[in-house]
Length: 196
Image (cartoon, rainbow, N blue to C red; front, side, top):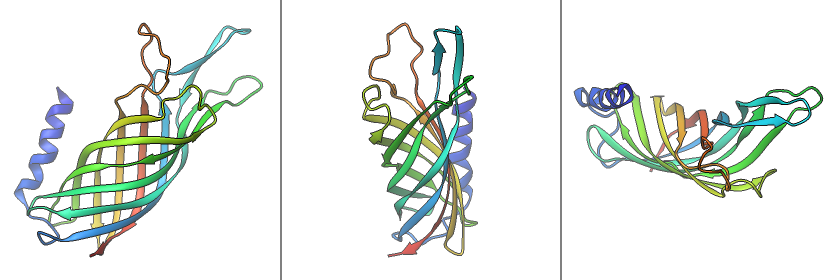
């Protein structure tokens, strides 16, 4: 319930002000930044020691392009293509550090609530395609997440912070009794907007 109230508040607040960009403006944003990702409800059991090592966040980089079109005084639509190195690390075992590394193509499709002061709120859907992994046989190639975020733009420089909430199972074969693993990713990128 708290999440629903927060989302309603976030999309209602910008209704009080107008967009920084003119209606009909299309802007392309090259973006480069960092991400921190992990698989939720995941871990490794060491059979010999009978210990459980839970997943933890793994930091890597992301970059790509996004195209944003100002639809009205308040809302814009955005679509992008980002390359993102993601995956998950595990708590360090006695003699090894284990991790799953994935190379993903992210396609965020977002509704953006814009303001005159350059503060923007974003939410949408995001298909994710895993193009390479050190655990290809175990992971689904296509996943879906819900990105929510906030950005601030000043003099065409845009700082963007997002959290991608995974909604599909990461692993191909998870029993129905298991609590499924989903992707969980924080991204922070810096971009520069070029009006077309």
